Image (cartoon, rainbow, N blue to C red):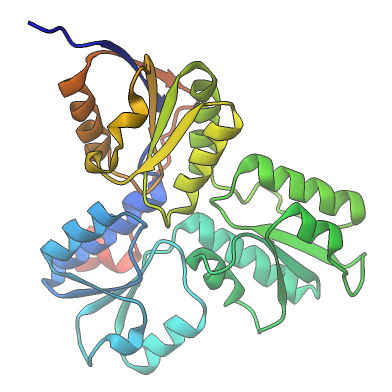
Length: 320
C-alpha cells in the first residue's frame, strides 16, 4: 500500500472573520429571521462568494444599486464596506426600511474625514480606487473634497493647495507596510499633516498580516482563503510574497487549488481573509488530508476578542 507523503500545515492565527464581518452577516441573518425573505442587500455584504451564496439561499437578494429594488417594505441592508451619503438619502426618499451593516471601523474613518472637512483641511485618502470602501468614504463629502493617494509615487508627486493645511485618512484593509511607506512620504514632505489619532488600518487586517509575516518565511507555500475582490485577502497574499514565500496563492474554495504547484512542498501555511469563513479553511485542509499525511500546528500573532453589536433595530430589546 502506498503511503501518503508527509506535509506540515501551519495555520495562521488570527485568520478569517473579523468582528465587522460577523456583524454584517448577522445583520442579514437576523433581518431574515425577524422579517422573513426577501431581505435586499446593496453590494455583496462581504467579499466572499460562499457567504453571499449561502445568504442568497436563505432569501437575501443582492443588488448593486437601490434603483434595482422595487417598492417594498422589506429590509434593505448596506454592506460592511460602507456607502456614500447619497445611498441612505435615496433610501429615505423611497421610504425603505434600511439597516446599515457598515463596519464601525469604517464609520470611524468616515467621521474622521467629516471632522477634517469641518476644520477646513484638504483631505487625502490613502486607498485603492473603485474599492467599495473607498467609494463610500469619498462619498461622505462633496465631490473634490478628498484626493485619493494610491501609491508612494502619488504621495511624492501630490501638490497641495496649502502644505500646512493637510490631513489624511486611510482605507481599513490596506497593507501595513505599503501604507507606512506612503504615510512616511507624506510626513516627510508635509511635516504638519494631520493623521488619525489611532491607525485607520483595522485591527483584523493588521493582525492577519502579522501572522502571515511570522509564517511565510518558514513554509514552502502559503494559501490565503479569500476572494479576488477582497482587498484584505489580496494584501495577505502580497505580504506572503514580500516575506519570501516561494508560492503564495489566493483560493476561494479547495477546487481552486492547482495541485501541480504543491508538488514537492513539505510545508504549507494557511490563512484566511477577514471575510472568509473557517469552513473553507477546513475544506482545504480536508483536500490536503486526502493527498498527504498531515502534521498541523498553529502560529499565533495576536489574541482577538472584539465584538460589535448589531444595528439597534435588530437587537433583541428593540423587538419588545
